[in-house]
Length: 74
Image (tube, rainbow, N blue to C red; front, side, top):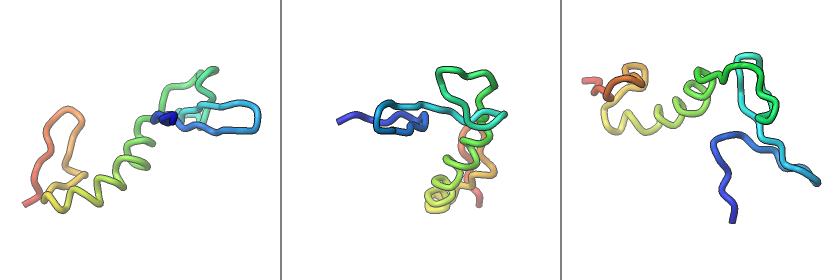
């Protein structure tokens, strides 16, 4: 069984297209020209999952930071 990476993949009948979301929109990985849109991945993929889990731990996604530890929201 093949694992799918965090890079979005579309399978067609004949080939596989890997793409990433960039600041200019989705671009094929093979011809990437723009910077990766990390804000998109943070707010559209990570935040919805974190918003479902973190309240159970009394943590808040809005008060977290990539450069520091998670903080409790007491």
